[in-house]
Length: 360
Length: 218
Image (cartoon, rainbow over all chains, first blue to last red; front, top):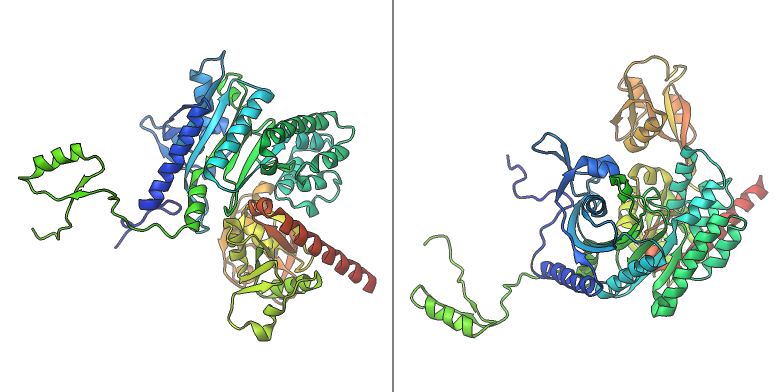
């Protein structure tokens, strides 16, 4: 039986040559950007206790890779980056100051097979922990915009605010189950099925530019909470426009995914040619409290795998290259010391390795 | 330019009729002209791909097509992460739970087996009802499940119900209503907003016209 010894698991891939260089370049450029903008790097374990994700994440259990630890407890291969960072924030970060973190780490997601979905994703991102309010929101969004501009070419960043939808739906006083069903329909922009709820069925289409604000305000007339959320969003939008990002910014009040997780402003980044959003994030003021310490926070993750694959699609497929750009020095065991001396004096050159058949 | 994936067969025929009525030139897809091609131009703004239903979802989800037209049944079974922009109101049918005529499906506490071409839809339906069932996937003529004694019931698409009747089965209850949908990739709808707005509005007008015409005739 051949087994699977020559295969990689579905949804993973070997990355080499030009593509590996591209991944490294993206990572280096983002590291440069985040360092300049005042963030420090964090690395968390590749495996975590299942308890961490059960407490902090809204991911369904079936989308996590699980294994058993040496103590017999259930472990999860890092299923997202923000949850472990929230654990760190609650247990290890100073409580009385703002911490800005960035990361480049792979995440693992189990998904139904043969649909071309990834199960291993290279993700970069930032988290700003210990600050609420418009200042930290603007820093987060500015960093997101600069991220997209650094690595994506043509891009758009979309802003939303979960407070708007939450206020509109709670006005109706529906039971949790019905509310959940409606949220799914709004998320899929499937307005046709939200028959009775005239206002809610318009929300999926509240997306676009500044023209969305008056429409949304009209719809929310009399709902103070919804109007307040809208007002806040408009303030942020105006500040960003005046800073020169007008052409890059969209509004979508129908972003309702992961409502249990996000508590305020939400963002999504889109790249020309990509098949899914390449950046997602927002304010998550209640996540850290799942680990028993109250700390407001905001941040975003970047799907570097999707960006790299989109960039690769535009270029010819990665070619097999020998990676040698400078002078190649042939040598044998006698001339090896001399070759090493030459190498020291001539940076950029390298030692040659001849291809040999296995018959020596 | 928008690239759309259309579900081959009945949905494709209807979809083309709707596109044509919405003012798009679908002549490249005329049966006598199309030959063995799979990629067509519809006017200057749309490119059309013909594909099997489940593949329409895969293409749109992966972003190799910007949008598509596919039945709600396929979307439900795939658990697809796509936007459903418009109910096109054709290809109407329903998912139903059916079994041997006259039997009470919910009676008794034994292990229940459901045969279906749509295991995900079936599992989710009973999960939400809080009932534990075993789903057996059958590729065709699901009606044989209860007839041969493989399963207690089936979950399948029912249009007229005549196949059920001919085999001594009946509908126990409806699971979901189904029709054809205009779907979009979640990223492309943002990067190609104007193109999507235009097509969605045109299709919505046609859907409305057809509905009114239909009401008028009745």
